[in-house]
Length: 135
Image (cartoon, rainbow, N blue to C red; front, side, top):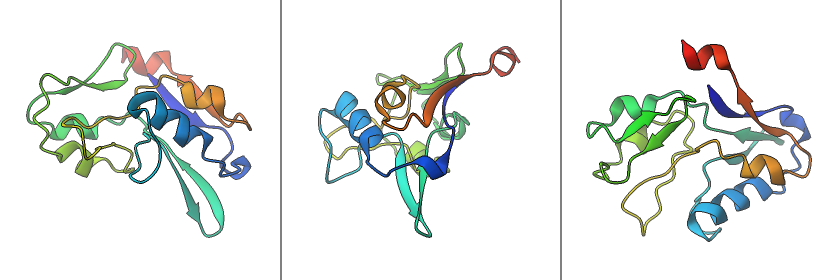
């Protein structure tokens, strides 16, 4: 299974580079509404990076069958099948499914690694667990 992971939550500088890179890569803009498929929260004065763990809860609630895992275990949204019901966004336990006001289809982390490449403190990385992908 391929997914984004965090090495050291405490090392996050809350610079938001990861959020900006993600939003600009897929929506060509950042600001106002959160368009990033990951989020930096402030929990009791400490930063917490919230990422998609590819749990599949979004796929389980998708009645249109628009969300499915690829061979690497990354859940992807088929835009042609999506009916924009919003159930996947509501079901995401981490709140990292993105629903832009001007788009008919939500989006989520596709484990592309752009955020990890741009993180100045290198706390984000793509984790690949081959045993889980073949199970």
